[in-house]
Length: 315
Image (tube, rainbow, N blue to C red; front, side, top):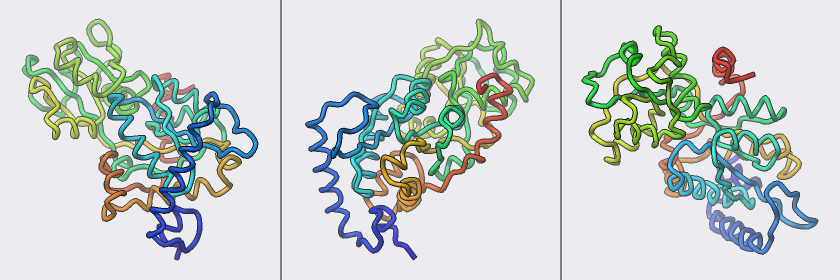
């Protein structure tokens, strides 16, 4: 049976004690890379080390994302012996566009943006998702001034000023809009039309300020911000959606020629091999709000694609 450390290094039989060596190797590669000045998307020059560029939809505060994905890039680099760097993007559409053009090799997408990216980049492969992404939820929140008590009835939201997150967010727009529709609420029919905050953190802030009376966001962000005491007491949880598949890592179709034919399997092995018993692994899992990662398949998001087509968000 292949060990977890072997999966990470890409070489069978590598002992965990070599992780420090791999980390040092990755650091040396990164240091050497600092001397290169190539535009994003440019092919590496002859003899240069190919850099794996990872990205993510900007669904949270940029400082949170920088800490999260820089830590992840260092971990992947040390585990697989690759030069890995995190490339921030401006919005959800940019993440999909840069993935399509090959400027990003591995991207953390939501369900909807992942579907959009796969359709635009034939041959892209899902490699992993968090354990919580197999049954993910959104939460509707309201300002206390509305007087609404927690309920499963979404109909009272229809008369409130309401904001989604990003226009192509799975947990901040697509699935909440679907569940509102199922409850008999026009997902576009809020007074003045719905707002689009751009991120889950921004949704909380806009409801707290009273700019909007209600909104919807990713449950994991809501939980982590609440536990950290970062949610204004004026914002309260109103309802929770049913479960659906959401976030996942998607690997670009050009990655095998850049990093080896087995790169998808090696990445799946790395992610699914992360263990809460290992301090370094635990740091990554904690930042992602996950207990573990599990394999992901394109078919996991068939329902997302169907709903996206129905709402005109997938063509």
